[in-house]
Length: 176
Image (cartoon, rainbow, N blue to C red; front, side, top):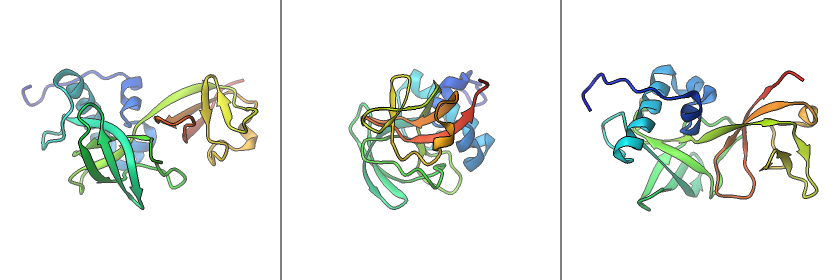
């Protein structure tokens, strides 16, 4: 694609690749916009990590070592090691959680960004002590979703995962 090509990416698509409000605050609006463009380009041309900032790819965390993760790229099985960028202090990805790999974060050759999506509903404690919103099970120790939020409508950003429970990435209250 020629330089200067603009992509249209919905807010939902941007959130799906980790370019949500928390990441925007961590890496800047320009980088978040380039990440959104990378997701669109990857959907058209296939995922790749290259020096072209229009590309990004997602994968499953297979190892966590402090601020560094080893990621198995979806589709290719390639293993990539990258530092975590854009994660709040309370959230560390687990083996099985999903991240987006990109080369558009200043100061990093390749960075692992959160891959999140939003769910809305009224959080309730389930019989297995997890917190449920709709059909999604959240970790029972979700520090961002404390007991004061139970029973009140919220919109919750959760880290995409292959595991049975998801981690809470951000919470917004909704009108009752």
